[in-house]
Amino acid sequence: MRRRKPKIYGVILAGGPSSLMGEDKALLRLGDETLLDRNTRLLESLGVKEVLVCRNEEGCLHDIYENAGPMAGIHSALMKTKSAKVANTLLVMPIDMPFLDKRIMEDLLSFGNAMRCAVTYSNYQLPLYLPNSAENREFAKVVALSKEDRSIKRYLNIINSTQVNSTELDKLLSMNDKKDWQRALLSLNT
Image (cartoon, rainbow, N blue to C red; front, side, top):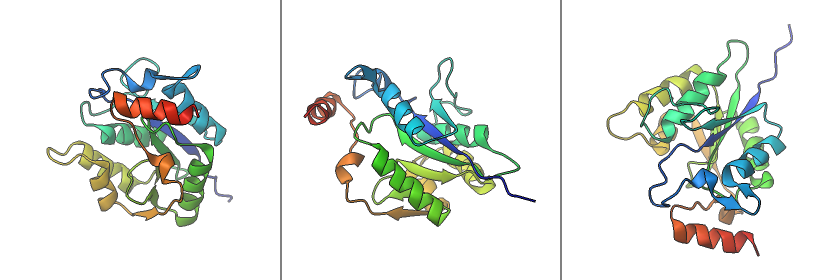
C-alpha cells in the first residue's frame, strides 16, 4: 500500500489587535496590495494546498480558544488540517514580517522536510515549519489555554523542534509600530 504524501498548508497569523500600530496590520498597503494579499500570494507561490488566515472574521479560520494569542491560531490551524491518513504540515507566518520572500520560505520548507520536526530560524519563532502530529496539537492546546506563558517560544521548547541559521536575517524583521512600518516601506521601495 502506497503512503499518501503529506500536504503543506500555509497559515497566516493575522488576528492580533495591532494596538502599537494603531491600525490593522493585515490591511496595510504595500504598493497595490495589502500585507494579507502579499502573504497569501507568497504562500501560494510555494505550492501550498490551501492558505488559512487565522483571524476572527468571515471567511477566515476562527480561533477555537479566543483571546489566547498566536498559539490559539496555530492550534486552530492544526485542528483544521489534522488527518488520520497522512501527517500534514503547516507553514506558519505572521502578518507583520513584510520582508519574507519565496527564497527564505523555500529554505525553511527544505530544512523542515529534511529534519521532519518543527523548524524556525535561529532566535526567531516565526516563520515556522510545523508537522501536524497528535503531540503538536495537544501541546498547542496546553500552551494556548495556559494562564501564564502562551508564547510560541514556550511551545517550541516543549515540542520536538530545532532552529537553523539564515544568512538573510534582514528578511526576518517584523514591524510593530508606525515607525517600523515607515522603515519597511522605505526599504521595500528602494
